[in-house]
Image (cartoon, rainbow, N blue to C red; front, side):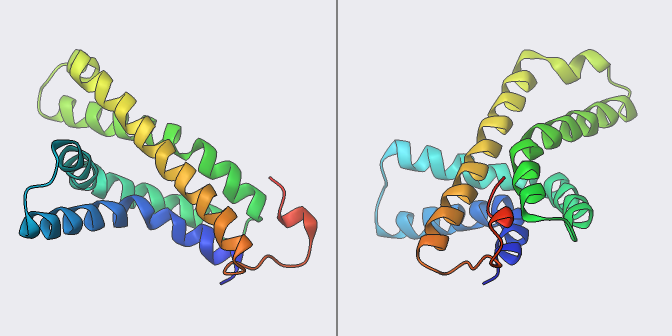
Length: 155
């Protein structure tokens, strides 16, 4: 696979991982009761797709359109700032939703939501780390090919 295809496909990782996590959880539950830590991790990943799936899908499509003809170094830099950008977009969506429902803007920044925004950043950077690790591994296994130029490899 070409490197550009890998980086474009990596935008779907936060949508695919929750589905896989819920499938694994369902499969493990059929075998027996999994340890609590495993259940909590799988439910957290699965529910992140439920809560953040639609806003992230819109964000990913816009990001993909903006990056489509850019260099690979731009894809890497975008991956490093994407969790922060998505967090800001998600806060804006929550703020608009709160205002439309005649809520107060202060509800957007309650302690529970602030910790959720932090969780969202941690989860986002976990996906980014997974993508960079996948790029490293797949390049070593020659599953991802870069066009001969060295400038395309550097961020």
